[in-house]
Length: 202
Image (cartoon, rainbow, N blue to C red; front, side, top):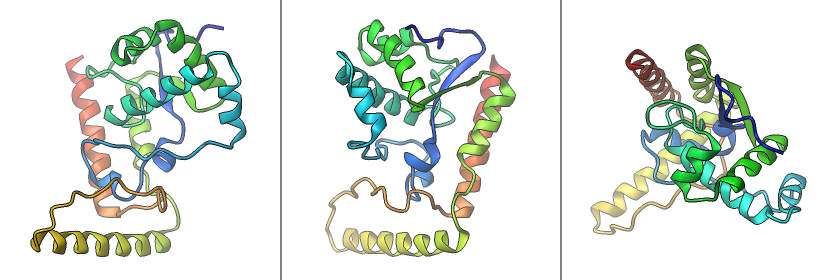
């Protein structure tokens, strides 16, 4: 079964990107060099994805999609640097994965609700950017998580001053639904402004 990702006027997003693939630390970073990846081994969806002759290849394609989405504007969307939607063909070229694997993989990932296909319009992208950076979770719990994050950053800064230059490791998945409000709002505005700039150039 072929994917309809090639259909004009649509684009793909990683479903639940904001709550599953980002956390309070990643939301503060303008350009990601890593991404939070949930552990899905043992779930029904993972078992179904791998229950296919090319299941392992489709899992590899999924990981490539997550990396592409982590560099996109807004994050979570499978968009090119120009702002145009990626297709299985363009993803195959970018990720150096055979086109048939990308085409079938996109269809299977959509059926599993790991990918979602949305209308590709200026308004749709603007709304997607706002949703992707909308504060999630209980505000009181989020404030507590922020305090813990601040303490961790303070300890890291102290280590650097003492000559310990060990780089910070990527964040844990724990607390992924919470973030600092002021930085998040700035991030949201920057994402919306970037989309508007790209739309005006188009």
